Length: 557
Image (cartoon, one colour):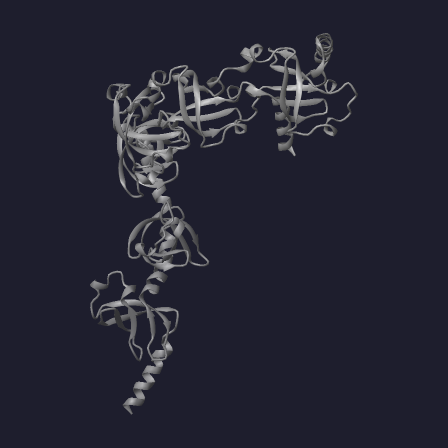
C-alpha cells in the first residue's frame, strides 16, 4: 500500500514540474566537478560546476533557483541548469539597467565560431574583431578572464547582446594619444613597444600613440631590413624627431640617441691615412667597406690595382673580407669616403719612363689584338701598344692580325711614354729604316728591275720588289699592242722585267713599265711623260691598298 502511495505522490509531483520553467531546489551534494540538486522529483538533477561563478562558496542544504530544461531524461533524472536560471532572471534586469553604448563587466565563458561567449549576467557575444585593436589569432588565452566591455547591440526579440572590448581600448588609447601629443616635444626620449615591422620601418606604441621609426633612422650604419634590429613586442628607447599635431603623427629615431659618426670624420680618417675595415657590399662599380658603425667608404673598381684590369669587384674581394685601404677623399656633406687599395703599393708606372725610355728596343708577348693595334706585355701589368700604322713602312695594315697573332714574341721600339695615362706607344717598323726615306738610292727613273707578280687587277700588275716595296705596271705599260685581259698573259708568281718610269715619294708609289724595258732614252722620256698624264687622271692604288680591299671583300662574303 505504501509503494502505491509513493508512486502516486511522485506522479503528482512530476505533473507539477514543467520544462522551461524556474523552480527552487536544494543543494544535496557537492562533488569535484558537479552539484546534485533536489527539486522534489524522483531523482536529483546534476549541474556542472562550471555554471557556478562562486562554486567554492556553495554549501549543502543551500537553496538555489534552477532552470528545468527537461522534466526527466532516459535515466529518470531532471535536466537542470543553474546558469540558464540566472540568465533568464537577469535578462529583464539587464534590459532595465543596460542600453547600447553603456559599459559593463563580463567574464569569458568559452569560444564559439567567430568569437567568444561572455557572461554579463546573460550570455553575450564578443566578436573576434572586437576583442582587441588587432584581432588575436589564439582565442583560448582569453577564456576565464574578466574584461570591461561596451554594449554595441541588443536584440530583444532574439535575446542577443553583442559587446566590444576594442571600442573601449580605442577610446582609452585616443585619450592617451591626446595626452601624449600635448606633452611630447621634438627631442624628447620615450620608451615604447615594437607593434609592427614593415620593409620601410617599424611602428612603435608609445602607450597609446603609434610612432613611425623609419629604417633610415634606426642606425647610422647599414641594415637591409628593420627586423635585423627589432622584433615585435620588444621594448625600445626612441627619440621624437618630428610631430604632426593635425594628423596625429610622430616620427621617431634611434640613431639620434647617439652621436653622428660623420661629425668628426676628417679627424678620425684624414686623407692619406691607412684604414682597416670590413667589406659589407659589392656593386658593379666597387666595394663598400665599413670603417665603423655608420661609416662606410667606397673602393672604386679603378682603385683596386695599378696594372691589372679588374672587371668586377668579386674578382678581388668578397663580402665579409677584412681589408686595408688608403683614404683618398672625404665628402662630409654627402657622407662619402673614397678609398683605394692600390695606393698601399708603389705604382709601377712611376718607373716606366726610366725602364722604357723613348727609343729603347723592347721585347714582349702579344697579349691582345684589337681593331686598331696589338697590346704587348712588357712585364706583369705593364703593356705597350703597337698601332697598325706603326707595323709596316710599305704596307697599309687594316688589322694587326695580318702581321701578328696572340702569344707571338715580338721586338719593338718605344715611341712614346705617358705614365699619367698608363700608355706606352711601340712600333715595329721603326726597327728598320724606312725604305722610302732613301728611295732615290734604291731606285732611279730608267732602272730596269725584276720582280714577281703579287696581284693582277683589271688595270695592271702589282710587282713585289726588294725592301718590301711594290710597284705597279699599268695595263697601258704592258705592250705596244692593246691588251684586254692581263690574266690571259700573266699569272701570280710570274717574274717580270720592267723599267722604273715613276717615283712618287710623297704617295709612296712606284710606277713600272714592261714595254719600256727595251726603250732608248728618247722613247723612255716620252713614255714617262705619257705615264704622268695617266697618273694625273687616275688613282694608281698601291699594292697594300689593293690587298686590304681584297681581304675586306672576302670577310664580307
